[in-house]
Image (cartoon, rainbow over all chains, first blue to last red; front, side, top):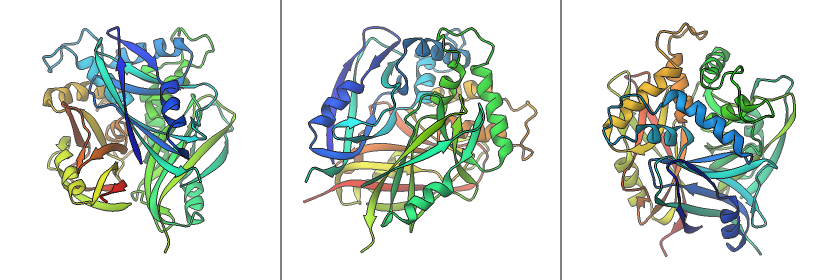
Length: 135
Length: 135
Length: 135
């Protein structure tokens, strides 16, 4: 297993940053022929999204998430960022993707997004790569 | 690690297809004594559900998901399947389950469902199996 | 890979039990230098939450979850615990966290909670630990 940390710098409060290429670059240099890559965010106001690479889907998703975590509710958590926490929870801070020959086995339409809900801030992604090394 | 691809053919627009038996069949022939099986859908309008094997729970879930992604909203994504994308995102395209002696360590009530939200279509499941081989 | 089962005993109907320390204790004794720990609940009315260690965030989350799975809806599932199933589904029964030197690489604010939605009941967590052993 190898571990690799990536830096992500968001530039807006809410932002969907595509990261599939970044992750594939790490896999291509990993020395593994096939395996799984575990993707983890050590953060509580960001989430991982694996879905359509078409941007409009993310706008529709934001509307749905705002339905259950609206900005104008009075929240118990006084830091003012409860909607960001709740969106982060619903998307999740971890996922795992299979790969072969240095590239994730994503479907034709899939993109992985780092979703920032309380930026702009520098954040991190921790990759853990397991599998079979090249002979 | 071994990788195995399964074909799933949905027959309705929305459908919950139980797949625990299919996955256990692969595990029984895998040559691994114990380990984890990673389950991945290379799709953006399907999701994985690990919950009650009683069908009524899925109907109740559909009602809750429709609450935040109703069919009659006007969505930005023009393909007309934004509710399917959003439901897929909330369930997730990947999960991992531990197994022993060729069988997943699911609880008494747990079933794994492949959830189709934009069928009928042929779709795929990619299994990655890691663990300890039999001596 | 090693497997370890933990017992969790909830004392209320709805309860968020922090379990990071319990899991770190297992990792510290695992003999692995670095790796990933897969966390699985063989249950359908409990979920795993990886988010803020501040308790108020959980109260805000409960309000959001109640928005799409209210206690006073008429549900198809006659056991009376559909809201618990739906909350369990949205949080998920499985997650994976990277670790190094016997400790999960959680962010400064992250805590892992076992979330009981239909207690009080004795429940289980199954840990599967993979990675590189100490030389």
